[in-house]
Length: 620
Image (cartoon, rainbow, N blue to C red; front, side, top):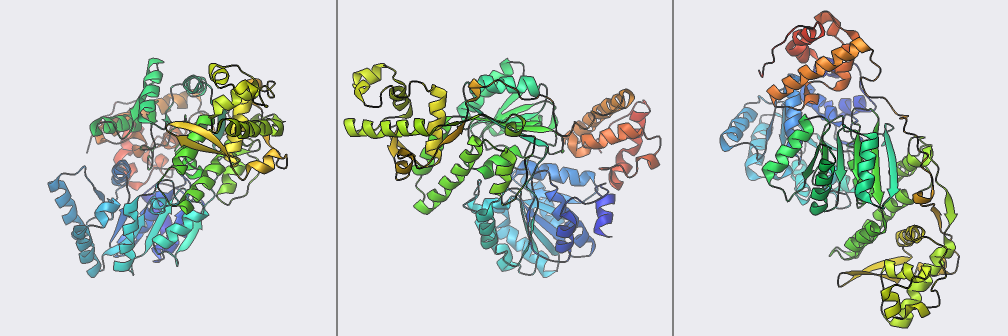
């Protein structure tokens, strides 16, 4: 069977997207591959179709290395729905279930087996792979979330380093490394660590045109978030990222009190609570998950309409990976972030005070600077984001800067006054002070701290009285971003210090130009979406009724099968069915997302829903 036939008959898709065809053909022929494809771009098909094709050609099983239990469960469930033999080995199985899966594996009854890297490299598992290899029944290794192998990546996991054993022990078995996020440095590290020097490299566009990027200045983050959700995403699914566990619980509680169905998720919660909340998010509609970065990688929920950050991530890779969980279905979605001076200070401090080698710290500072540059940018966000990954583009007309170009002001004078104040405070007092105290002096505020220390006599006192606090905070962020100010943690207090890069700014040799504080500008942003409309938005009245009925039926099926609803059918498939209004099984053929197995399993039930007849849902 050709790979085109597998795509159509098993998965129900009429054609490949982007580089999928070239990748799959390369791997089916036995080639190694490094695949970079954005979230929602169809990475899983790039190893699932080769696994099926090679298994049908008698070449045995495919092992998928994944660090994510939720992803294993959902992908195995989706493969079962499509009629593919798949299984996972992870901690959710009891000893008898794990043993039965291992026996099926050794009998060659499984096409794809999902396992975590920790399990794959155990002596027991390797012995089972040895047995398969000796019989010529080890077909392919697919290493998902491959950026985890790199120390330069945003989610480094040491256990991934041990996966070199796959190449050393099974040199003739093709390997794929797949990730949605890797800059040039991370990409090179993946190649080196996984010994993929001879692999074909397939790099897709990182552009997600359906996602609107918005970054705002942090004032009252909780209120800003609530306003954003209520105005633009009421009743829709979303993810809110916070830096601390305490903040996660505070925000989840605040949203819940405002009538939003919000749940917390962080590593400090009991495992059963985390699992229950994750299941509710995946299987329900309109749930907002408030989480640390412990949540999200591998979450396949297609209808997440927004991802919000209440705290700045560590780097652009993390930001891109997390925002990419919005709009996996290709429909309009938002990536919204608010950040402030304290975010910059905290991230700098964490890097500077880490026990890592200086070379590593320098790379991390560069990555943070790139994210700060994105946040402070006055030009197209998408152009900046894609350029970071080595991709050139043109203005997107769908980010906040394109939709409402920010006013720009010359902050060079303010920057010089702030730096001069930091210098003079240290010169006169012999100690350093924090951002708030420095700004109070520049603005000429007679606070208790200023008067107690006699800092009203500092020569720069009041020289920046015309600047607002918001303006000076923005200047301070920029000075830290470009390295002209260094933040040092002194017994729990953050203090400011000049650097070698301070001198050219003080001399006026380096201009500082900033976006105008949003508090000083009217909100002209259009609330009309310019991206794709939701799947069913264009349906007529009768078709919309059919769509709603189909969704209700799908929810019952998903509950009976203990799977998320999108594993049964995506909204786009239900919308296509509702629009076509099929009257026979033949009418259902060739609808995208409706393969042969699903047509056999659900065709009659779908027709019954369309015709308004009663239906019975079975868990079989």
